[in-house]
Image 1: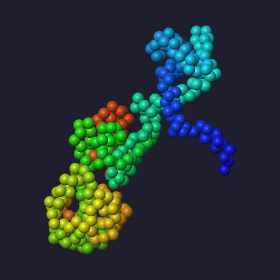
Image 2: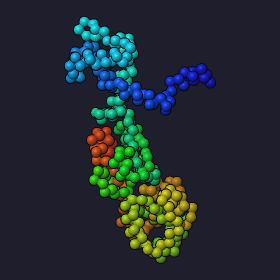
Image 3: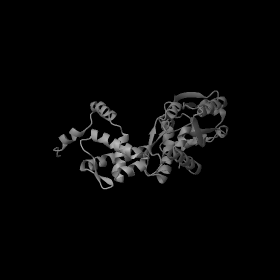
Length: 324
């Protein structure tokens, strides 16, 4: 490999210790002057720039004088009724125009979808595995320039209120008035065992349920807690032999033992592709539902891009099947 260019690359790398110097330099420059510089450059005159920026020609001239004090060049030379840029000004324009375009692109004040932008969605890992494929396909089919970032949920209310994430999807219900939510889907609950489990040979009764060992899924969320309490009321004497917050662990263990477990239907459908799982028909569970909801800060609706992303996600779960 040719390393001849490596020293040159090292020379232009920004070191962390250089950052304070950058800030000190920028502090001494009025960045509004760069906007005025661009206006004069593009419109080739002080009067024209003044009209565009709604300033007086005198204010524009004073700003150009300030720029001349910063840069070692006159920047613009008077020519007829206008001005012509110097070679140094043309050099500056290449960098300043790119910088201003990058800033406007990042701000995306018009809500334009032709600019790249990252949408951050917080989910628990298991729910992310369930919903993110549907969300990815729906958003990419309509807005291919948008990038998606999936992060864990630690404190959803804090993450949303402080705009550390754009959206959260989970089974919680939040009391904060600043957070809005939409139910994406309500899932049923399945009683699950491994293939060839003895319980599959005959209809399951309450007595048989008491005789076998069970797993307990300790997912957080008001919806799960309410369902868990109702199930406890239905089966107060069931024997919990293994408990875990991780539904992947629960599914794996059920598939390799005689334990029974309960999980949302869509999780069962997803996991049955990975492990030899079977559902056990059991009527008392047929009315149980768990809501999976999309949460966002209500101020996010001021952002046209995010507002439309929310609509796309809701539409995807109205018409699609997350387990498909």
